Length: 69
Image 1 (cartoon, rainbow, N blue to C red):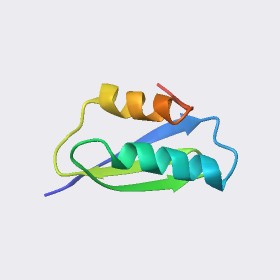
Image 2 (tube, helix red, strand yellow; image 1 turned 60 degrees about the vertical axis):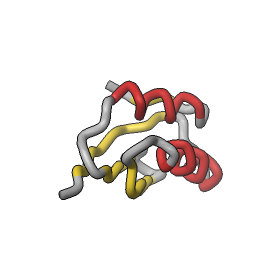
Image 3 (tube, rainbow, N blue to C red; image 1 turned 90 degrees about the vertical axis):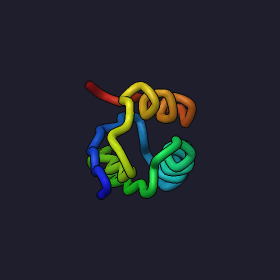
């Protein structure tokens, strides 16, 4: 069974931003898929099990963006 969680990321303005966020989130242990909608900032993360929000936030920060509350 997989878990899908939707987050909102601020600061993304282009396709390169989407690629950066996708790349960093894909490296989080347990993540199996990442889908980003640039226009809304919605990021859907699919994982084998529930993930710690801190891991997701750290990956988004490394990519240069912010996870909203």
